[in-house]
Image 1 (spheres, helix red, strand yellow):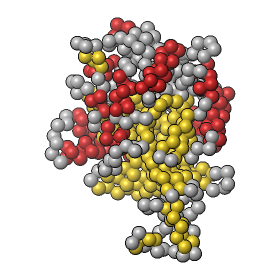
Image 2 (image 1 turned 90 degrees about the vertical axis):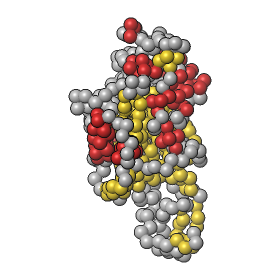
Image 3 (image 1 turned 135 degrees about the horizontal axis):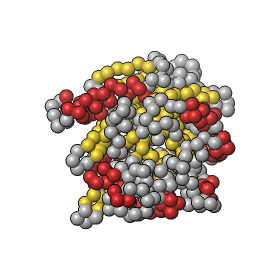
Image 4 (image 1 turned 180 degrees about the vertical axis):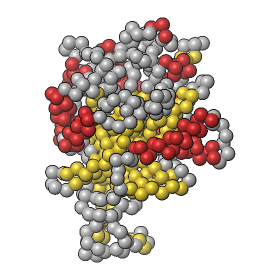
Length: 436
């Protein structure tokens, strides 16, 4: 298990277990639960079922999965990270301020929106602007060291099906997989063989099992070579038959017998703060076909969270969670034209499993801001950075203070705009949201 982190910026607690409500009145004396109403559940250090004055203790596993948005490496980042003397790159300082959060989660994931095709492996766009043979937009191709440095700060898995997956042709897609495999960073969404594409990626984290599915709406008009159609999970811009294939894959993941199915979707309109009708329809279908969690990316700005009550086969309900867009996590995109491309979020979901049920038990949100210095483009945790500033650390620029204060007011309110019933308590930049 990764090391613990004390600071919790936002916590959303989802109440309502599978067979009862949270106990409203209970007393613990010497570690024993003395409240004896009819069958109810309470999450504490463990889960105890109370019936007829008999206490039955159940084994409980609780873990967190932390998701971030788009991991992008534009030309400006390449320039700032490049050492021309020895022809090397170093992006590690970009993650210094958020590494404790990434490392604190039991499993950390993000969207790798670049290829690893080796020097000069990308398509021939803006060749004269390459840095050490590597390129940013419009054909992303990044040095392999990025994988090492993502793993160093806690990343366990990345999604690789997005609109830039073919920026370095089929060969670049294959080499990206090879590099990830060689370095040991798990991935989902692109494949070297048809056999691999038919498998379901499953990760077990501290005794709780997760199936991951990853699809992209398209690939910027690029297509795999003939015979290579299987190498990427894509929807051909929401073609009905392709969407049905994705639902089938989700059902296959559910049928694998895992505790939770997580879908990582690359979809939506860039720079729009709300989802479009295609996103809503896809999300509805994914929940109907077995998804428990949907993490969205591609718009490069934040889009809201929704919490659903999903009916199980036995007639009971469970919680489902979608965030339509996690925004950018790291990129060279800045605020402009009303689009908050410099703001993102680290979204951690808590999962609980007992011998009777599994459920999503909480959400933690940590707003982020992408800052620029002469030598680095990096990520700040918003509330922690502001707290340090108000306590006397005056190293921020006026522009940074302005953007951080905006993010503190905007991010949580925007992300929770679809959650109608919640209570917010403000204390030392910690926000606690309780859902009925």
